[in-house]
Length: 168
Image 1 (cartoon, rainbow, N blue to C red):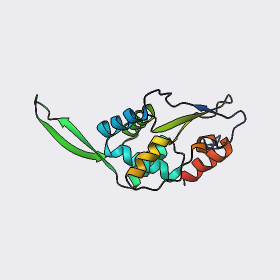
Image 2: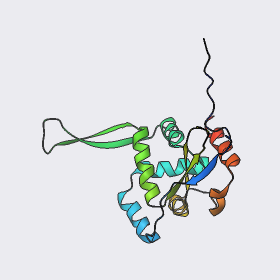
Image 3: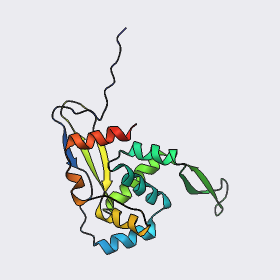
């Protein structure tokens, strides 16, 4: 009877490297801000607050934080058997919904994403952090933010230790 050893995805693996996995946008910031304001959901702001609180997060950590804070999503569903009637429902946030919103925020350069890669078969982890645009959006909501432009350049050890701390 062999026991399986589970290793933390946040452990430092030989050959670990941090790879940019965000959007390379040439869209002017004014347009991005206008698009964010037009198409955003309250969930987007809650995601930004979570990333601000933890500095670096995985999508799972973000989802868990939102659930622990009781954040819900509002959805509009077509009533079964009806062509033109809808009902509004409130439900708990899901990992899929958070991932979709993260992709939206990355495309607008409001947040960015990096990926840890390793040739040794260690798990690939995607890490989200704020961009300058995300900081500006939080400030418009009177939320203080300690983010600095160089935060994306912290080393692998520092980032993984923050991710491990966030898991507690």
